[in-house]
Structure formats: C-alpha cells, structure tokens
Length: 303
Image 1 (cartoon, rainbow, N blue to C red):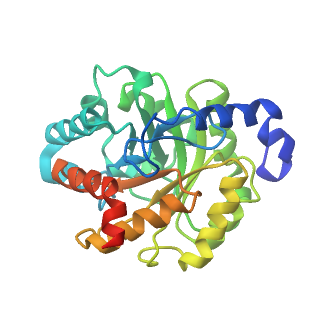
Image 2 (image 1 turned 90 degrees about the vertical axis):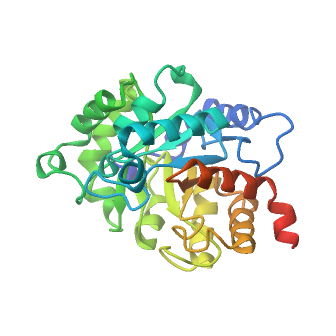
C-alpha cells in the first residue's frame, strides 16, 4: 500500500470516519474558550481527542539527549512531566532521538492509560545509535512500547522529513506503521516535516493521519514563509488530517515577548488548521508561563 494507491473514499472510511470526526469535535471541554490550553481538540479523523496545549520533551533534542533531561536528570524530568499532567496537559510528545521515553514512562506511571495521549517518532536519518537507526518502523514501535511501558502508543511519526519523494522512498516504513495500527499497537501514524516540499507532498498522501509542522506568524525556524505554509495546513485539515503545530514560539526565539507570544498563539488557533500547540518545556515555570499566556491571549493581543 502506498499513499498514491489509497482513494479519498478509502482514506475517509466513508461516513463512519466523518461521524467520528464530528463526535470528537463535539467532545470539546464545556465552557473552555477557543485557545484555552486545556480545551479539548480532535486530531482529524483519528478518533484522538486531547488538550490544545501539548508538552514537548525535545528542546535541543538529539543523540538521545534533550534539555529537560540534561537540566534535571531522568528523575527530575519525570517529576516535571507529572506536574504537567497534574496541571491538565494531556498531550505528550517524544521521539527516539530525544531520549525521553523513560522519563515519560516514569512521569505518567499510575495514570490511567486512556487519560493522556502519547506521540513519538521513528528516527530515520540520525540522532540514535547506528543499530537502532537500521531498525524498521515495526521493530522500532515494539521497542518504543517497552521503553514507554505501555500497551499502545497513540501516534507514531516518521521523523524530520525533508524529501518531497518521501511517500515513495519510505513506503516500507509506512507499511510497517500501518500494520502496527491494524494490530492495535498504535492508533495513528504520520510524519514530522522539516521542508515545504515534503509537507506539500503530505496533502497528496492519504496514508498520513497526523502532520507535525513548524508554524508561527514570523517565519522563525520554519520551512517557508507563513503565507506559504498555512494554506498547506488548511488543506490538510480540510482533508481530515490532524495537525500538530511546533515551533509556535520560534523554538523559544520570542518566548519572552508577550506581544509576539500572543500573536503566535492567535495565529495558530484562529487559523482553524492547527489542532495542538506542541511547545517544548524544560521546566514547570516555563509551562506555567505558557498556560498564563494562552489564557490571557486576548488581553495580550489587544495590548
């Protein structure tokens, strides 16, 4: 199976998928304003519902190392992750290259598995030991399950795609993730994108359930100008794909500028094309500041 060989009708699964998407949208947290960090949002037609704000564990993450673990150790990172859950965050993002699977496992230990969403990514081009890099996506998923201490992973993505020909070149990996989904090991599959050509190819690839994309109104650490990227996101979203936004704050470039933070949050949320704002945090203080900014985005934007 390749993306090109799956029809639009097969992708949507007929009316059932459309109803599932509508049902998830209706599951938004009662009374939560649009853009509230704990507003419930649906990720396309996947059936996955989670919080608007996601907790990213990959700040400067590569070679199985990231800021949250370097700064606090594995145990400290686990406590921060649990603190994020206790505050109301229900989306947690990792990757094989970040080295944060153990921290997520320990931080969420004892929490009912259906109470949060886990996303992680398969390394394809680096960031992990050579032997692990040679693993197929199916083998990687089995390892991820052990490392995360869970029976299933909500979302597994192919990491850091830049080649527009990825639907053809990564067919074997796509097939493996589809097999894992059918086996109940994962709920959805997708890709994280690091080039505009690769992102544009996603819109023509029905295999993709969830896209992880770089987006902010200033074009900082993005794959193209905002006016080039946003139309692609809107097309993906209109097709029923889940869209996870990253680099919302330009990889921290303007995290301390209240006006730019407010504008970035509004740009993503008000577009209607970005479901989750996945922001990297290395401390609970950073998370608390983002929660405050999201809840006060209207006032900050007006100022």
